[in-house]
Length: 125
Image (cartoon, rainbow, N blue to C red; front, top):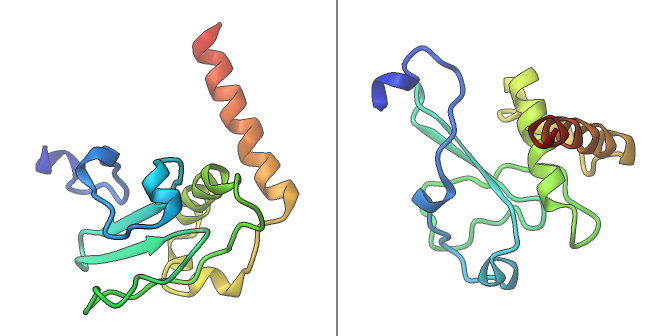
């Protein structure tokens, strides 16, 4: 399995392999999406949470990277999809805190909503 990712810039792991280090209401309910990007070449992890970018005091070496924050309580899944789309298109966004972007425009979220709906509809039909 480790050899499957050699030479590929991106890979995905099952969420069950990553446990939450925080006891926050959204996590406790199991309804919150966040993204952890691991750069295997630099052995650096990027923790992206559209609700809270603070890793807490129990992380000695980590850095919470600033990413756009969702305005409400229901957009986290679309924010994660948008994070993934933007990071694949522009990997340097991770190193530059998404160029200071504070929030996604509605049109940016609608773009990933439509892409997701199109993908799912192809699976159904």
